[in-house]
Length: 435
Image (cartoon, rainbow, N blue to C red; front, side, top):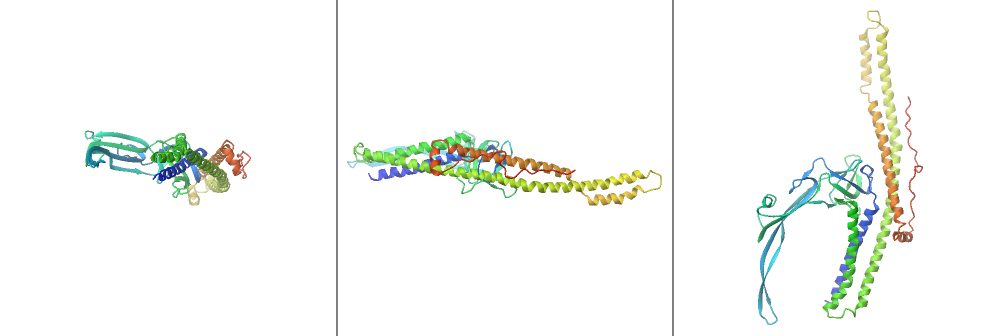
């Protein structure tokens, strides 16, 4: 038994260390991801801010508020008297009575639907299935049987030994609530657009009503507090063993120091491993950022000339139609009324032929569509370029500050040049429509 106590302490310390490193890795992940605009979201791990929107909001069960997801629970309090019989060292039986109490869940439920995250640039769809949801607590209330909600929102049956008190808790992401989302972006199946959804290879999928700063601070506190708890458990196991075996803890002081030093060394190695991996992941996101820029440049290079050709063809199509229509008034004008010459009714076959040859004239709409595509393409390139420069700045800052700089030097990580105005390998497509 005495040997098992230190072993248990070391096992718990190792579990705390793993949890602390996991929290630290997530804290660095949030810190290393620049916040993207919804229209600038491409494939890969992204971070966005906005408000929760949906076409048909859900109505929560307890508060009946409009939301995009909610969960609720009803707990009932109970208490009872329990009699226990014990036998003392003299063989005499002693009976004592104690009170037990607790809360039992008597009803619960919830619902969630895909929704949109809106910012000042646009919207992006969020598939919440599989995400770590951090909703708001919209209701937390305890009431007795005299409250209408007791039976209206809870079951009609009560648990045995009930104290006739129920606790109603509901958590939800209300409509228009501010959200912070980290997750994997992918292409939607129904339209050409991106969405954020669960991916088993993604390191984090979080939908939170907390701000980016609070989320990052929470992970950071988890790293330090749980890591420190592991250090205490690693040493406390040996202290508890000495107390259980009535040994003087001062005798085993070297063991305490060895256990603490071993834990700190493992923590240091784990921290270096975490920092190096996060820097490598950040470097890969820098490369992905440049690939996104390249994709948008290729899209502009391939799309715009084709659109220009279509619009030019429609313009020539309408020019020919207008030229033929212009000849009809000329024919009428050449023969005054009452004079010998072409009958105005004779123009009808020609007019009908023009109408059949040119049923729809759409050049105006095509020019507007071309203008929209030009604007969208340049906006996409600007967003992709901004994302690349921002993620590259994050990366360059990380590998130059202490203590990350030491790990970056050991790993041979080099800074990334930012993208300037002359760094584009493909020149902008010039739209020059002839008169």
